[in-house]
Image (cartoon, rainbow, N blue to C red):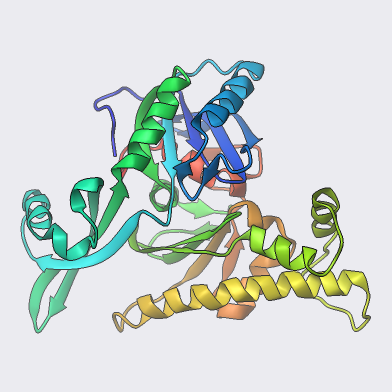
Length: 356
């Protein structure tokens, strides 16, 4: 959603707040693509930000302001991308009407779609496309309802940092915009006319968006992320957090397990089991989408987020779902020299033409 309108394209500070880590990108949307001039990540203070809710605004404000000062960040205009299990997404069917009439119909019927008091939410929507019921053409709409308290708290956080809040974006919308913005992923794989399952493996949770023709068809959150993987490992090994990260980096390929019953192979099995648990839940979302229409399909899985640094994870997904899977390494219209899979949400939020 735009917090200000009709602003010229200029360098922006795009922030992706997470419970474990906050990613920041300074960039600009130009005629030749998105240029990223600066990027960095900040450990989010423990218990200050969980599931899209700011629980310790003073600590979070102090941490971000100190980091911005240290890095001499001068850009004032902020695009923010968020996600939370409190954000409600619904695919709803309404009569076929003109685009300008959709909002009034949704307002009239909103109580049917939002189980709580609708006045506590900011409602946005995206048109998925036409659908036929008993040979009658209707419209399929993706409804997105964000709690007002989440919007207001994030707006105030940016103001307290003495920055200018311009755009509040929804993380699934960030990847959808990037797919629309580019022609190739990882240099050689064309994007046009494909349906993607974009999976953001985060710390507390993982986000799944099915995107067809640049449109979000399904958006869901699964309550499994790298935190759950780490806990499974720590239940078996007496590692501290530093050693745990080192051990995960030592994994050569999660698709290969030797017959030896040593600590390395036990670790790989624990990681594989954790990812299989996640994939079991993702499969339910896939099945929901694929069974809604006989023509529905998923052509490719795009993996991103902090949990995709595990070696061999894309092949693991390919083998599990029998769908080609890639960890995002590049887009043809994005100039970025870092680990792009970690900064997808921040980079996508720079694009202003199709915000939620």
